[in-house]
Image 1 (cartoon, rainbow, N blue to C red):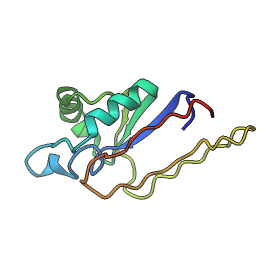
Image 2: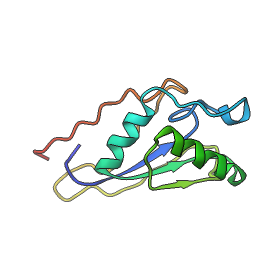
Image 3: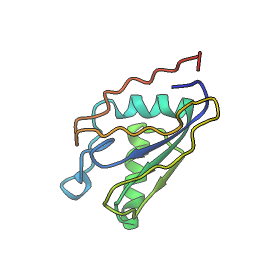
Image 4: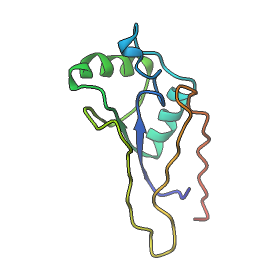
Length: 118
């Protein structure tokens, strides 16, 4: 990735937290979530996306804060289906949209690499 500031759109359940843990005894942080969100936060803006009902906002935000998850905004009540990102490429050819599909509940074992030559 380039050294330009980033917008990180991160799914909550199954990516950062155990899928539907809040419905089955309580939220649980997945491996690498804290470290990943901290690095992402340092490189731009972090927005968490969730299909959770808005009524769970208070307990969700409280859990994320206690767990040390860094983010700027969180959106609740999103549809359960696909999340589609559409963005234009820079005139230089830099691609400005990426997608990563993680295996549910496996955590974020992703290394962020910034290429200063881009």
